Amino acid sequence: MRFVKMFLIAVLIFGSLIFGLSLLFPSTARMERSGSINAPLATVYEQISHLETWPEWNPWDPAYKRDGNMLQQYSKPASGQGAWFTWSNTVGSTASGRVEIVAADSLKGITYNMTHPAMKPVKGFLELKPTADGKGTAILWRLETNVGLTPWWKLRGFLMDRMFGASMEEGLNKLRNICEKN
Image (cartoon, rainbow, N blue to C red; front, side, top):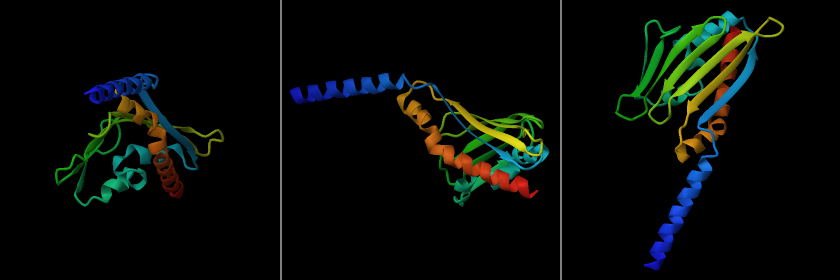
């Protein structure tokens, strides 16, 4: 009985310690990548504001394409403010989600919201501005989410850049290649 009591006390102390340490992490997570594209701002804006072009450069789209049961639907029109797309598994898996453009400005970029059952809601920003020499476009891709107070989500937020940063970089490289070919 004494062993059980000591074990429960140890679990309680460990749990309290983990929760206490998680309070040191911020309740919001943010990750960003930036680069420059040797293409006019209008060309880059056309790619990022038209959701039907996202599969060509979005680093997470191929993962959904590998699932033969995945269904994607796009709003009409599929570009600009209010445009959205959804993805879902037709077999009943929880692999589903939605992206909606909530702000679009051809001189500044877009802001979008993304929801997915396995994640907290994410606000995304694809910000554009002319490069210093005026010959290309500087792009900043930023994702932000409120992870709340739960230790698991705070840890996940803390590791967000390590988990998804390379994918964002890959997406920006694909976007750069597409825009520079046009």
